[in-house]
Image (tube, rainbow, N blue to C red; front, side, top):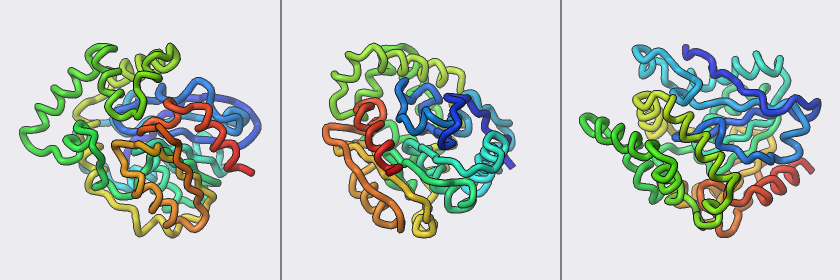
Length: 277
């Protein structure tokens, strides 16, 4: 069994309970400062992925316990711990969306609804992001090269933002935003405090997973929010994911890549709030 993910409190309202789960190679910092009204009006807690700061795990047991059931169980216990059994709205980005799907399929009583951003159910799905392709297929001695690549990417603010630009549709707009640069720098510092070996293993593990047979069992209202120009997860896969869920709605943001919540934060907030009506 995995140790439990620590939660970071985002808001303490009395409305809809919400759990945020970020994507791989990211952090709790990678959410816009102005989240949807429905998210900020309730008790909202942000959780990291395994191996990502501050969720540090025993290295010796990491590969052995890293299974879809164990990961989902760890989040389920954390949700019970932090929300006292109240069903929550899970907002998951990319790999965080994959985790949200696993939790909703295996522990449906804990999930009231979902928002999946740039998400997927099949880990073999990769787009044109060279780093992600490499990460999901890396093996053996290539691990050393990948660790070096990740260290170079996170070494400075400039190299980190340059890497992020490869997954965005109009990076020049986001990179001109002080808010985006502040968020990116916080995420970079969190990644520097993460365990690179564990992050690599999470990427390889996700690449071997497929939840497509669990997806059609999910009955919770779900918003699948995609970037029209997402270079990481194909738009067609995200649309098919929505079609596979009995109670899902699909929306795509134009001129948007793999980070809709940051590239088009106002549209992201509007779609999430509208999904509650």
